Length: 229
Length: 229
Image (cartoon, rainbow over all chains, first blue to last red):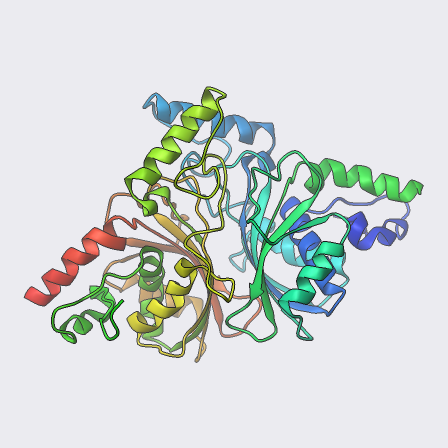
């Protein structure tokens, strides 16, 4: 991507859309869902580090990803051989921890986007992110298991209140959000917020959002709406 | 569980089986897979902290878990209503980040086992573990995305060599292990070993193992074999 092109999520860094004349980029789909969960907390305290494991839907690879899961489920039902085309291994009844190509550091391009794009979206140039991206047999909506460390201590109650008040997020306290229930809508659902047992300045959460809607198309429309305001 | 009853994984702490007269416990299934990956590294340096996100197969809930996934996949195919019985939400084409009941700290019983049992198995009473347990639509074999911090720095090469030499583990360097390929056998497959980008003393890995075999039945047989040696 061209240097200096802003990556914009309107609810987080909408003003950035005005920084560059001509090009604005839509961030990576699992990054955008995670950053929607972290943005309200980053307003309370800078976030220093993020550890994320993703549970990514097949539609992240487009229509052909959806067909591949459908076809493989049917092949298993008929006890026929399953031959992967889109994903590096069978995705039906399986998990594939390999999305994108590999960098020299052993991380995939998809995993490094969580750090590189996250830094731009949250305006935290020193943010450190360790990410493992995993494809799961889900049609729509990415889910992310996130642990993060804040500079100043943030309590669970403060984090919940910030997420509850954040435009575009839904705080879940009485149930655990799932990718299925968050499919085909624009909001990011955040739940299971609790203290990190390894770090006094750490918190843990689980978030889900439709990466086709919020992760791509809807976000692009929202950027345009923001610019036309 | 009775106080003092050893939790035994023969390859890791087989000698513990001789500590208690009468009772020996088989550890939790996702814990055992994770500890099989971490044990060889814990021999190089004490492990201080672990951050784990699990991708757990439905068979962790027994035969009824398997039937539930099969029935739901069929119901979706017939466009019939899906009613969850065993899992808290639909598991077909979904991820459910809720396994076990909740402790006051917001973690589930399943998640706390990773710390409480991990401490006993690795003989690391101060080990801190933050865990998120997630059920995925996979029939057999649990997978775990693990980040861990060691007291002394361990390189990727050292970690790989230790895992390669460890009885019961398979080191994967040229492909990424999946739950499907590790089903119905007793070994734990470990891959994607790389540096934690958030911590100089941290490493990241992905491991898969059949929790019915290594995570339960086979381990129980191996304990007995160990005692009869």
